[in-house]
Length: 215
Image (tube, rainbow, N blue to C red):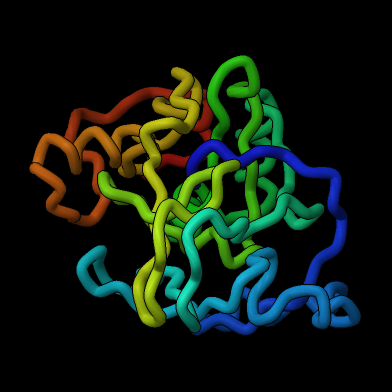
């Protein structure tokens, strides 16, 4: 999800994306007037399938033309901070031992900031920005805003290469068979910009969760 600049805003709004996942958080319903479509986007967006990335994958698309240099997203309390030292217990308490796909989605839809903030995993399942995909030629950046005019129907993307990629996060993602955000960016650049599903192809990596999650 890129290097997000933290803001003090705590306002949130409900999501109504293509999946039911963003709909089932009633605690945010009273704040629906704060965002034009989906929290925490300050511009009108739609959540649509992105088949090029695999089954059940989604992206964020502009619902109208968006001028260049437009701020498009704000940091809200929907973003949950999980210290790296607590990731094992968090996964064990929120997912069944055989729910590999659920754990993968949890890791894919969160992000890690660059040093010195890379000892925390940020999870935002009720924020539509969780569906914002990587591109080597992104049209959005933080904190700059939109990089150029984005036309209605165009997917909003960011460059993941600026994310944090600490060893604990690399090991954890590889343990569950996926790439980190930075590895996704590196792999896409190696392929000349061709996007493929983010699946880890290397040998199994060991982590602190190995005993908890025997596959």
